[in-house]
Length: 394
Image (cartoon, helix red, strand yellow):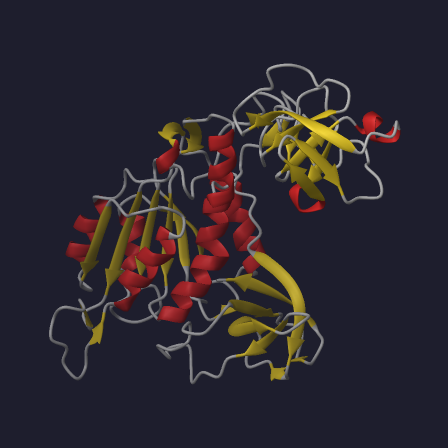
């Protein structure tokens, strides 16, 4: 069996671009930039008042002026009509451009205005106080957002500030999703005492949705060779195929054989992890990958995080952090001679990873309060308080 890191390397070595498309900014949320974004001008584009107050020339203050004549009121979006006369000031609003003849803003709370004259209750004035100077954030031509940046709300805001109404982003893969099993029924169908509801369909769709992906094909197929062959063959033009169930060693676990029969080349079957050991992975004739996941929900979560997300992130050149190393809280003994992954909550200052109590990997509550899965290496017999552990964030 492969070590999970070997399986990850194999998968990511086959990562490929799915192309580039241009989207209007409203549709770019959560997508990955496919172009470098540069500043179209200086930011701020002018010396900007950072508070309501009065713009003066600090030299007038140094030369003994204490009562200033208000020459003009300058609002955001306006310019001064003329340069400051000696001993004069502008009454200025937050966000307004500070004219070149002024080089300090005194806040309104420190001023006493009498008609068109103002004095200030301050001991000193520093040049450029309360002024954001032109270009101090970015200069025209500066790289602001490198390609590979995920379009979060903050990214969207910056793109809008830069005047980018359209952006080039990485195309998403065309994904097919299949769940399998005679015992599995959809959630809107009455369930017998020996059947289970198809939670994995909704789990995997939700995990894909976090990447802005929606399956182009989503079906449930019973454990029947002919039906599996027909349905899986429909997805051979996709970039990714994800299946769930039917990959262990049972009499009805037909998926590996069916995938081979329709031309999918096996990359590996079984990885030395728990849960998720039976995972099967292969490559379609078009170069796309097939991820055949085990059937219980936690195995789906773990294998999705370890393998499918790794492949997606590499293909999209998404560099967001999804793993952190923090101290462990508690004691945990190894239960198998495999790399184990178990759910934890992250809390405290500094942050620590605490075990969530579960019965088994089939416990439907397993992911309910989990913030991450922690890696328990096969060679480490016990984890103790303070041990550094790798967390795969959910």
